[in-house]
Image 1 (cartoon, rainbow, N blue to C red):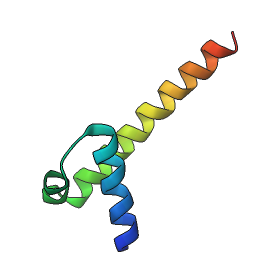
Image 2 (image 1 turned 45 degrees about the horizontal axis):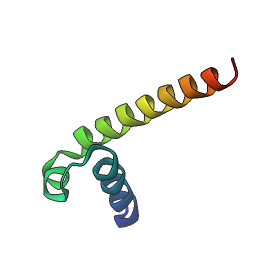
Image 3 (image 1 turned 90 degrees about the vertical axis):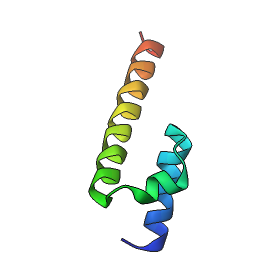
Length: 56
């Protein structure tokens, strides 16, 4: 993982979940990736529900 990818991953989780930088960096890489995947799935589901509600 590049430094830029790590920065984006940490930003994404910190921004949405309000977790601290030290907490995120203390996590195992695989655990952080799992949380990113879960958060992306959640956001996609919420966006799909919003889209469906807007179109009937």
